[in-house]
Structures are given as C-alpha cells and as structure tokens.
Length: 460
Ligand code: URP
Ligand code: ZN
Ligand code: ZN
Image 1 (cartoon, protein in one colour):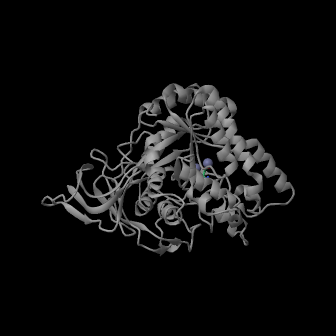
Image 2: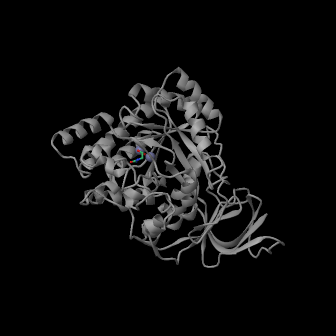
Image 3: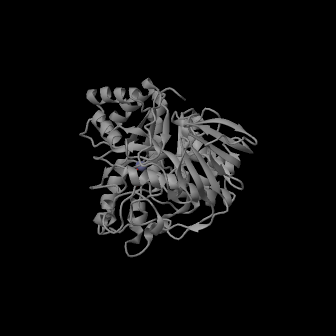
C-alpha cells in the first residue's frame, strides 16, 4: 500500500514549500520534488491545495453520561464527522462518576472506542475521586499509555473534585510525569449563584452566564495554579473563555507555573447574546464556561496569534435541542452543557482565523495540530509532516466555499450552533496512516481503522 500526494503546498507549524509526499504503509517515507509514482501507488493531485498535518482535537466528549443524560454521538458517528472536517486524532475525556473505579472507567471507554473509531484516539483520564484504590488504578492507567489527567473544579457533587482530591491528583501527576488538564470554575460560587437566580425566578438560559461570570472562571484558574505551583505540577487549562481567565493564566506563567492554555472555536465565534435568543433557542448555546461578551474574542484571538494560547479545541459535547436541552426549560441549571463542534472546528478556524487575517497559516497548524501533539506526547508521530511520521494528511482546498448546516453534518445531533455561517475552505482529501478516509465532505474510509495511541509520561 503506497500513496503519493503530488504538488501540494506543504504547510507545517514552521515551514511552507511545494513538494510531493510519498507514504509507504502507514508512514511518510519521502518528501521531495517530482517523485515518480511507483506501480500501484494511489496518486492524489494536490495542485492548488495546502497539505497540512492531520488536525488533532485535544478535547472531546463522545461517551459521556452528564447532567442526567448521555452525549449523542457514538465513536462511529463522531470519528467520521471528525475526519470529514480534517481531524485525524482526538483526545477524549474519560469522565467517571465519583463512585466508579477509574480502571473500570478506562476499560469501559477504551471498549467503546476500540473497533468503532475511524480515526486515531487517546484519552485524558478523569480523576473524580481520590483514595488508595483510585491511586492504584491511576498508576496502572498511566502504565497502559494514558499520560494526562483531567480534573473538574466545577460540577460540584458530580464530576468535581474537592481541594484535598485536587492536591493528591496533582501530587501524583507530578510524580508520574503526567500533565493535568483542568476545567476551572469555582464550584461553590456557581452553586450559590445558581440558587440565588432560581430563587428570584430567573430561570431562563440567559441566567446561565450570570451564574458563571468571568471572575468565577478566573478564580478557578488562580485556584488551580496555586496548587500547581506549590506542587510543581504541569497543568493545561481547558476551554479558556475570556480575557480575565487568560490574564490569570499568564500571571501564573509569569510566576513560573508550568501552564498551557486551550481556547475553543465556540468562544471565538459565538457570544453571550447567542444564549439570550428567545423561545429557548438560547439553550443551544449553553456550555461552561459560558459564551462571553464579544470583546473577549479579541483577547483569545490575540492569545492564539501571540502564543499565550497553546491549542484550539472543540470540547465537542453533543446534546439534542428538541429533547435533551429541553430538560432545562424552566430551570437553566438543568440544560445539558455543551455545544457540538468536532466536525466544524478546523474549517471555522481556517475561515475566521486565517482568511480573516487573525492568525497566519503556521499558527493555524501549530494550535490546531502540532502543539497539541507536543503537549500530549504524540509528536512527531502526529502533528508533523516529515519522514517517519504517521501519514495523517489533510489536502485542504482554500477555494471551497460552503455553508454550515445541521442538515448536511455527520455529527449525530439535531442542531448546529454555527448554522448558516459561511466557510471558505474544507478538506479535499484526508488520510489516516496512509489510507484515504474522507474526500470532499464524505467519509470514504474504514469505520474501525482508528487506533488507540499509547502516550508515555515525562515527554515535556
Ligand atoms: O459545557 C461543556 N463544556 N460541556 C462539556 C463538559 C465540560 O465541562 O467540558
Ligand atoms: Zn469543562
Ligand atoms: Zn469538556
């Protein structure tokens, strides 16, 4: 099995040049001008197109029991949606409940994905309790190839950890050389504000924002960094939504904290007014941290451009509008939190980032692929175009124009928060380890080809 991608403009985090890429089996073996096609090789003409390394989504939820319901996608639907949109690897959050054994949760999640995913995958291991048994399990899970943890400072009584648990999770992470990803919002503040608004009869989706204002998130970031600095642990702040939280992270970095920051496409392109739409339409836009006032978008774009923000994720969390989001009619605290965007992350980021001149092509590749691979121990197998790397390639057509619509998406959810938004670019061909998996908006690969990617600790 060999594949030749001809005459594309190769764009990586650091380079831009025109060449052919030859892949044997699952690997890139040669990059050169005018490579002759060996007999039997599949040839793809990439003239006029960019060739990017496969995009990596650092933050998705696929199998997830959450707020009294389950996220809608399966690994089959999610991975095919990812591939059509140019994402060839995702990192899924394992989110066990507080009474579940971590090892059982790991095996459950792995079993859900293995043989069902068309793209490659790995996990962040959620720590939702900490005791001797949990610690034993976490050590074992790291040995099995998961080198990142996830903690929630929010979602009190469900996924959230106490300060004591946070301390021990970060202590273990430091000992094992594992990075800890964290949802930063002060859970007690959120709970008390929720109670206050409900007691005042303020029950609509628009009050979700007021129950989690920017300071609540910034306090969460400060809180996490206090623990991380004392313990010397490496941390990664997921879904940073606003300037206030970003500045708090940067202050921590200035003090010497080992901190990385993730932004989401939702916070870059949607804002607080979306969640205020009448007739409960706002529920489509409920996620945590909430969509913010528009001026925050500039802070996040600037962070991505300047490198203060390391990665761009989707935090894909699909809940149907017609059924699941309705659980929160009359009580905004019961609206399942999440805005699906796995399929559209790359095209939206290219259109509203690169095409609008907010980031250059290299920062685009860096934040949507390469840097994620580096932070989470996948580089240079993933996130790179060089001999020896996996042949995960996105031949990208910058001349394509289209409109985002739930009617044509592969994600298994009944709405799209970006409905009607134009996109100016999309993948022409997407390969996973040397085989074509998507072509011009259609999945054409093998449904079970995705592999679990083992990641070693101590890579940073
Ligand atoms: O609202 C969100 N972000 N839903 C998914 C769960 C989480 O907090 O990441
Ligand atoms: Zn979160
Ligand atoms: Zn999430």
